[in-house]
Length: 300
Image (cartoon, rainbow, N blue to C red; front, side, top):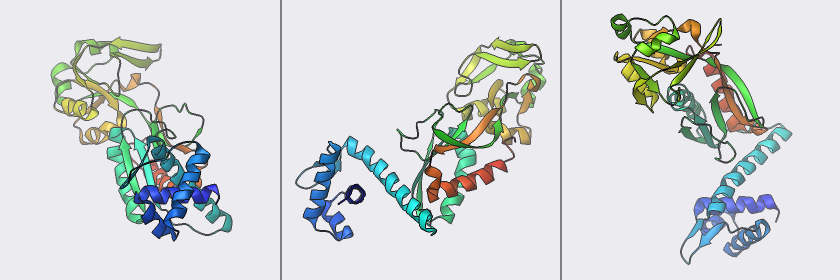
């Protein structure tokens, strides 16, 4: 029995949480399945399952190996299909990560469209405002906003967004519209800490970079709260252009200090080298690129 066969048996046992149930599905005897797992553990030098008389459960090492084994077996299936020219329907589990609001606003509609078209795929949508490690966290695709630092990732650029300063027309009518970043010191500031963690806001100008020290009246760890506060006329905030696209379009918020904005930030779909050969990943990327490049709140 080769390693791929042993991995297939391991995956079946892990998914069934039973040696007997896996043996029935694989049409093998229960002792044969047990021996295969024991040999695999010996080769790897680790314990994959915790066993009791009634139950089995993956160890922490086994859980990590399970994710890797599933991915390897899927990639092998896709590689075999590509080699013989046959078409493989996307299937399996797809894990995608993106910044919170970008994921909620712009990735979720694409993902639901994709799942409706591919009933053999299930998805995990992990949205958080931090950079994730695709390998360590078992992810297939990430949406990255900003310069890419990891050279091991493949990337497809879909456009760019901008860090902008904005406020409601009502606030600006009452307190005045700043014409220069230095005037922000005289205004109520709403700090969206995931977008602008520092209270020294940096700007660009014909004379070079400008840094302004602001004193926030309100700190928000969720960007949605900053949008809400600014939309209700409390003060001035700094957010990503895609986060307030609807509010700007509706006139609820107004963009200010546009001449002093920093360079735009690229938006990329990234994935591990070689994984685009996997049908579920390739087909999602193709759809996402098409939809995001047509998105009116992402500049091109």
